[in-house]
Length: 114
Image (cartoon, rainbow, N blue to C red; front, side, top):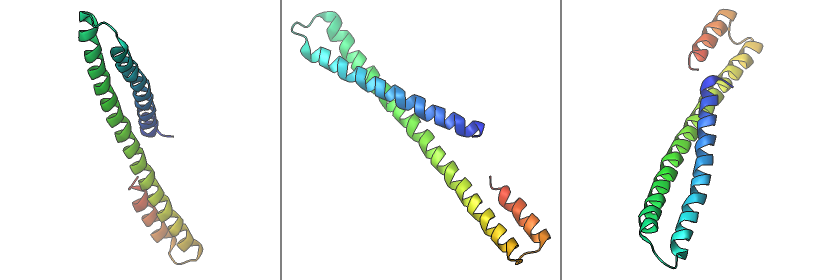
């Protein structure tokens, strides 16, 4: 796994974990706010701010995790396409349908796409 792929996997997994933990905190805050029998000033100020901040964190980290996941998907799609092209070129070489020089030139051209 190259450094960029590792960075994307780490970003996706870290942000996904933050989302899960934040959702737990968000639902806990809402539960506490709804279960209060007496509303005191600190809870009326802190709980809505906490709920808003946690909701913002969930949205932000979800977007980062989704973005990293899309980049990983695109990276896999490109490398899969390059791999298919190299396999096709190998098949043509085995069947003696391209010369060694054509094979080397086309292989270099395909590898530039990575």
